[in-house]
Image (cartoon, rainbow, N blue to C red; front, side):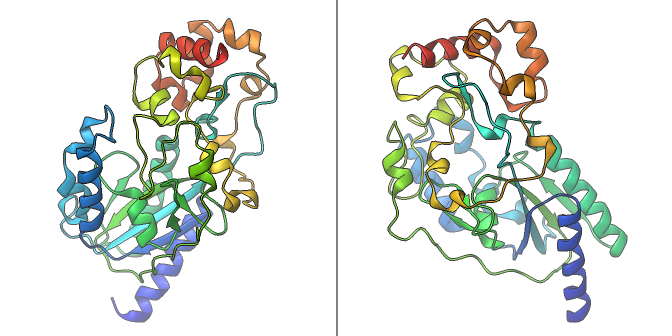
Length: 311
């Protein structure tokens, strides 16, 4: 493929990504991310991974895209905002992270990336690709930086100048060469609002998170009931935590998304404290069957509600 054809195809790929519903799209040059691999190892050795022992495995594969796809020549990275206008309306109720409002993002984004791959194949029948949405060991955030989608904020989350940090990342590896974007520079400056605002002090100075203290990890990945003594620190957060993102200046001016997939159902948005406290397993399964909330088993969810509301 000559330079002009490559540039033309790159524009088509990015245009199709936006048409499919992604808000941002960039393309990275494949390489081995040795720096990220070393940071991960040191982080795990320090015990910062908590119970996420799976992160100790496949570090080489996380860092080297060629170990997933030997013929990879381009890494397309997409971002889809979940900064919804619809929020929980009742005061004083258990708080859900915005990422858990709507459908599981893995399902939504995987389909869109597969559709994008089909489109690219229609433009170049020699194209082959692989889709990644939290499905295999890969440094998704690092590739978002490499593709120019944003920079890694001090809270460790990727921030985009236009849409803030409330967005999901999707990755599509391709065996064809496209025009590469340049990594975004850091725009956090001396700001440390996220570090200072975190109620559990989970944010490390090197832009990593101590999972043993992180509310999001403790209410989702940890899989165990929240310890009673931690309730006062959780600020009524029962699934995930958006505190470090809500305080970020870059999110103050971020546009609201227009993706109905990530909108909170009205029934959930209007639930009163009494309804949360009396939530049955049948209601839980009906309301959250397509949501990330379903990752937490009903008994633990009810226990966590009790802990964070009795603080």
